[in-house]
Length: 278
Image 1 (cartoon, rainbow, N blue to C red):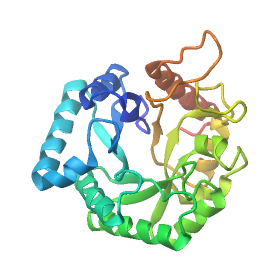
Image 2 (tube, rainbow, N blue to C red):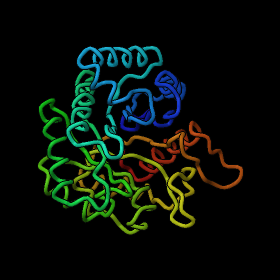
Image 3 (tube, rainbow, N blue to C red):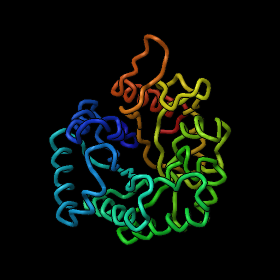
């Protein structure tokens, strides 16, 4: 498989970490994006933080064992929402530090975090991201903020403004949120110079669907790939279909998560080849 296309463990977010790596291995994907969330997935940020260095080391060893067992060569990136809604910043940063320690232990170079809720004062959102960025910088990690609906940065100009306000902050582009969120499918190309990571999932504006079977939504993945290539992007593309959310699509089209992952991989790689990008 192409080494720039990976898959998120969120495809098995409602199952165990063992099931996630077994599923990734069964799809013959050699790289993974490891999701670390408090509400779902196999690793909890609070548990990491409460357990300290010993818990981080044990979790890293567990991940490495699962990788070896299922033929997954690399955890290329991590994606975390370290705090629950309303978690005080100091507690979130404690958890973010533990997640960053896990990334460093696994040799993961890039961590995607979420922005603050829409409506948060801009300066407060910037200060929070600066604090997370400082934690990552201490560990040699790249920090990216996901372009996610309902969060500051859901509008492209605001995402650019955040990157200009937080030194060394990059973006993780997920076009699906620019389709179903406040941007309502309008162009978002101004963010591309700041993109350091990309997640792939099709979506539809009308009727609204965040998870469409690949190729049946409104995202022009060929144009996304081409425009990223034009600005010199050579990072990873992580397929992110989440098992905790239904997938929409025409009758007769496979909509289970493994089928969607395979279809997204085939669609994206085929488009890249047709465009002469890889």
